[in-house]
Structures are given as structure tokens and as C-alpha cells.
Image (cartoon, rainbow, N blue to C red; front, top):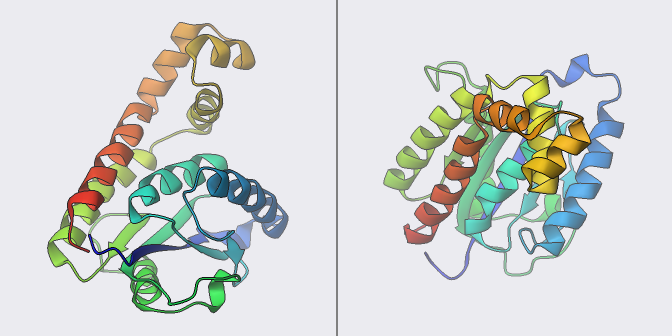
Amino acid sequence: MAENTVAVLIADVVKSGLRSELRSLLGRGLAAASREHIKRKWIRLPYAVTAGDEFQTISVSPASIPEVILDLRIRLQPLQLRMGIGFGPGPARIQPPVNRLGGAAFVFAREALEGIKRKGEYKFKVLTSFRSKNAVFDSTANLIYGLHDTLLLRITDKQWETIKTFRARRRLDAAARTLDVDASTVWRTLRRGHFWQLEQTSADMRLLIQASHL
């Protein structure tokens, strides 16, 4: 991976017009995500809402993007997000607001997001798309996340609640106490909600990004 390669994420909310309090919900969620993701050194700049239901950021390292994707999907429930991720040379100077920056990574991220929206681009429903100058990487990453999103779209509200609680606690017994159920119920719900597949996808995708020439 080239030293100056960055990852840009541009996302929007599916069926945003049906949510009357979208701006408030999105604003609170992204403010909390910005604090946590900057603290973890996943992103360089706070998330910026750019067009009603759309927001974007730029990563510290391209390899951190899979964790960013997973955490945003969990943290911003019940909002369903489309995400376009672009990899390319970073701007010469990176400073807020992120929506005023430009470069190849931003162009690729925009193309990836618009590709999700276009009918006929994919033969199955997807929520995540990647673009870079490396066609083999793009094909592999989009296949992985196409399968990932198929599982993601099957997760129920109850399963999301359990996933969010477990991610915050990282212990079955602690999550069980919070949810007022037993630990075996938490385990079964995580398994049925495909949580372990989601985490494994994030971990393996990180390795793929690190090994790719982007």
C-alpha cells in the first residue's frame, strides 16, 4: 500500500425521507462516533453532514475503515446506511471541514456510493461498495461485502440491540445483566444475528487492505 494512500467514506441513509427526526438522530450519533473514532485513531476529521442525510470522513489509515464501517452500522441503528469507500492519494493538506477536501479518494468514494444507488449495478442488494485504482482489490472487497451485506440485511431489531450491548460490554455476563436475560440467550442471539461473521469480515478485510497495492 502506498504511504500517501487514504480511505474516504461517504455514506447516506436509506429511505431517509420516512424519518421525521433524522437530522437530530444523525447529528447525535455522528457526534458520539466522531469522539470515539478520533480517540481510537480511526479517522482524521470529525464526521461532517454534507447534504441532509449524507456524511463523510477521511481515515487515519485505510486499514481502519472496516472497523469504522462496522461501528457506524451498530452505533447508528435503527438507521440503515449506504456506504461508499474510496482509496487513493490524500490531499496535500488535511483540515476540517472534510467536505471541502478533494482528490482521487473522494472521487472513488462518490462513485462507489452512486454505484449502490444505481439500479442494475448489482444483481443483489448491497449497502457497502469499494473503489480504488486496483480492480482486483475492488472485485474481491465488493464480493466479500456483498455476502456480508446479505447477512446484515437479515438482522432484526432485537438482534441489533444485543449486538450493540455486547459490543459495549465485551462480556456475555455483563451484556446479559444489561438486557435482563441469561448469558446463553445473549450467545444465541449474537449467533443468529450473524455477529461473529460481521466481526470476522472486519478483521479479514483489514488484512486484505494492508496486503493490497492501493
